[in-house]
Amino acid sequence: MGLFTKKYCEFCGEKLGLFGNTTLKDGYMCKNCARKVSQWYSVGKSNTVADLYEHFMYRDENKKKVEEFRVGAVLGENTKIYVDTDAGKIMVTSSSDFAKSNPDVIDLADVTSAAYEIKEDKTELKTKDEKGNSISYEPKRYEYRYDFYITLYVKNPYFSTMRFKVNSSYVHIDPWAETANFVNYAFVDRYTPDTANNEDFQAYKAMCEEIVNFFNGL
Image (tube, rainbow, N blue to C red; front, side, top):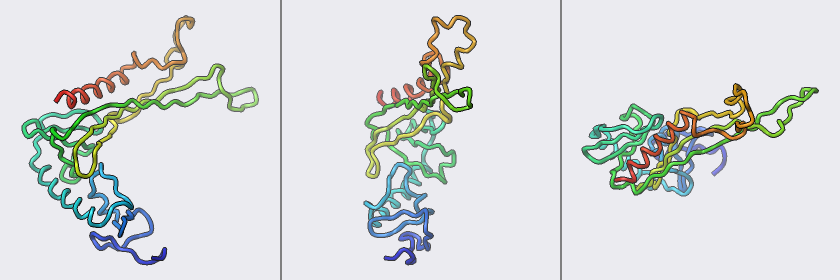
């Protein structure tokens, strides 16, 4: 099939443009149909058209479960875990429009375990020499950014993990700036991020622990 051969979505018949479409093992899927796929399901060239037809049937059945879902508890801040405490089910989504986003409804019994990860990224801070060139401090200085992730391990025909970020924006720590007003530097570590005394860091860590303990305690 040539580069400029007309291609059509196998599911809605829409004529496809050059970019933004999903290539399957034996066909193509347009961007609009791809939005109907579960956010946790990774679709690509190893999937057949038949695979996706089955998945869309699953997604249609899921809509009914979403309609019946009754929120009894909410965990998290950015992407949230909604719990139907009476039915023993959960949904994980950052959208408040459940009817539109159709978040996967999972039985609590199908959540096998949970874990959290704190991801640290650091960036070296530079200064200028007498010629205006960017140079490293001696010793080197860094600022740190932290993101907090939850992974739920689940039994589902289309995915086995649900990994999402808890915080809406990263936690920033600059050890040098945070100790700039200390009078006596002899006893101050100006190069190691003080996560133990950072309120945002500890709040998100506690949130992660609450979520993990909720699922691992079932």
